[in-house]
Length: 394
Image (tube, rainbow, N blue to C red; front, top):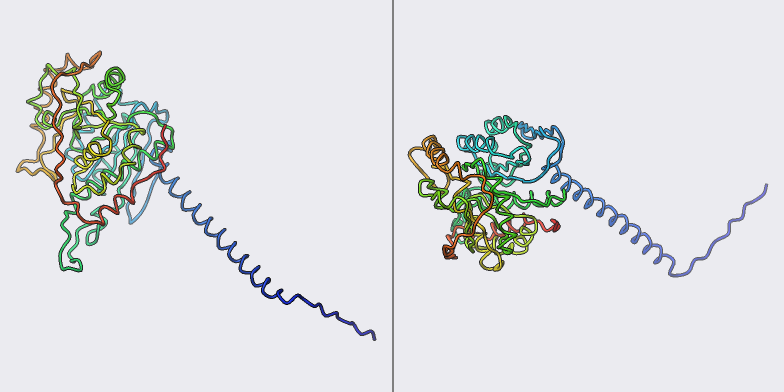
């Protein structure tokens, strides 16, 4: 019987150390690869979530917490001449009037309409589901008071380490957060789609004239002619938009150039938005829980070369008699709508202007005094965390 002789292999003295190092390197490489995979999947998920905002999927259902929302897309071929974003809370009575006015607007069929919600209500979804005159989408602000009833960024009953409650109103703070979030999400998504046009920002308690789309195009032409720094276009002056009776018909085809922008229907493109995002601290850290005063601070302190072109006769009217900032015993807007329609009959022959003229009136002074309500550092952080820097200039 043959005996098998085994040779004993001798290894260098540092072999065991090198073996341990090799194993460590392999484990580290595996961990690194796994980390890259996780990051890629997270990026892929976020990127695709944003794309669904303006994707051309005929029907997309999102279900969560026993809630089903349907995003309809009636029109498959969108010229994308204009994107309109409507910030919605829970006032369906005003939203009904806005949708009716949009329905009667010339050129509305070429628009992509995006409703941005901070309050979930099936009544609102059913109202929006009746839209058959243009393509529309719905997006939902994720940090709403409705979803955070007892914790930040919603209302809180607890105190800080000094026994004080934060000097903030969760409801008003939500409006500013929602505005910033929706603008970031929409502009980021549109940049992916290579959209080069304007984005018009409206609110649920607005009412539009039938020529507002046409007038907005005329404003673009006018800006190219005599106002290269007009990076923000506004469809109305605040006083006229809130009190249509004082609006002068003789100003129907005139615009004002000013440093003080109006929050009544502002329109801007992705290039201007990127400039605003680069000044995010001037918005997110400004001690004012109003988004419009905060944006005014951005323009005044960080974008000094930015002008606003404002229509002298409003194409957008504010009809909200009841809300966060305004309260009234009578919230019914029927009387206001009748006044608007009567005023529009007077100016009807001057609508759809062939051109717009520059008004010679002196511009409004710009006030920079903050209103407060935005002192909580957590609001600053949440606002900054919602700021996206991935939108590319078109």
